[in-house]
Length: 292
Image 1 (cartoon, rainbow, N blue to C red):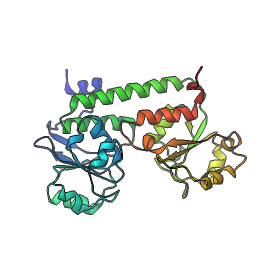
Image 2 (tube, rainbow, N blue to C red):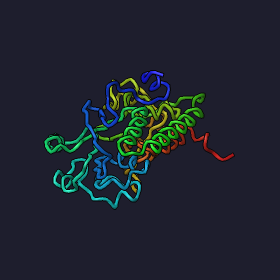
Image 3 (tube, helix red, strand yellow):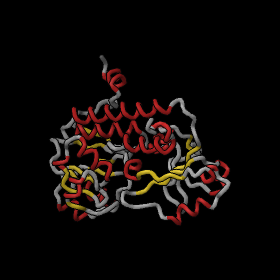
Image 4 (cartoon, one colour):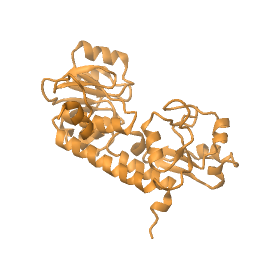
């Protein structure tokens, strides 16, 4: 069987003329790993979760302060937040740094100058998430574990989607940030989750992955359900909810369909997206989960 055909049939990404230890990241940068990395710095919570989920947690030596899952991740050295401390990263002597596209230019340039491999992951769809898991599995010598994780995630997500497929699609609005108001549109994996959970994303035609909408547009769209992602241990301030409850003509307000959903499960493109999708499905179609 030809390699391209094999890639299509297995769902694995096909990359022509790429050596087994050469990897191309989501920005098009190519890195070569002569051996399996033993000291990895992860600069994103979702990446950290993937590494631990595929059994590569022992290789993780540095994380950000937001890498709070699994609990073992919090025992690793913290090298900053979304703006990592370059000196802290270098002090760990990593042989691989994994980051998202928001990495600072000075960090990027210094790592390149020191020839420390940097690989950037930016998930815009669920297929990207599955691919990232499998790529990290190849990098860290955890291919069977990564393939199993990606396969199981795909199956579980498809199972939830199948449950909602024939149900009515209520109009849903997902609140990323209240002020300025930012939501999700086509081109983001969260939009995909909303659709798979059985909702009709009112911002699907906004033109970008994280659009800003005016309240005038929101009122025109008249969402039937509004979802507020909250971090574990924190509640959406009552003032935020009160701002929305003022719009008494909006269907979601009239029928009291303002729901809190777990930010960490939905916003991180990693292994727990299955639970994130389930939480969205429960909010959008609670009838599926009521005890008989």
